[in-house]
Every structure is written in C-alpha cells, then in structure tokens.
Image 1 (cartoon, rainbow, N blue to C red):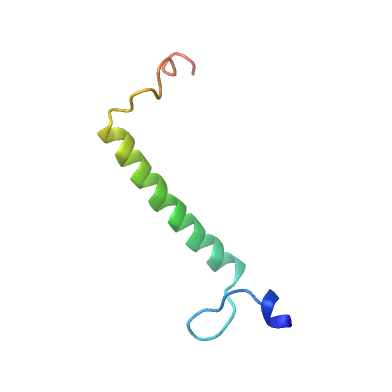
Image 2 (tube, rainbow, N blue to C red):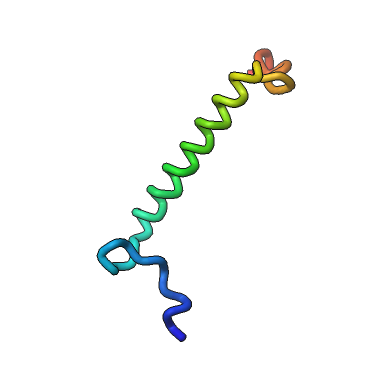
Amino acid sequence: MSEETVPPTAGAGQPKGLLQQMEELMAALNADLSALDADLQGAGGSGWGVGEEGAG
C-alpha cells in the first residue's frame, strides 16, 4: 500500500528530491513559455499588449 504514495524514482531507483523535481518543472515551464512566446511573436502579438505601453 505504501508504494502508492512513493514519489517517482530517478534512474538509480532513488526518490527524486524536491529540488530536482522543481528544476525539472521549471525547465518544462520555461520551454513552454519559450514556445508560446515564439508563437505570439510569429502572430505579431495581435490582441496582446494593446495599451500596455503607457500603463507602466
């Protein structure tokens, strides 16, 4: 029963540390944001950022 609550394991069979999990999540998030930014840049950013330039 306790196996259901065990976090995913690394290649060596050791549980991943919280720091390693966070680094992997941040890397995935950065990749997703980079892809989204590239998509928005390719689309010309239409609909986004209108009027934001003077709001700062």
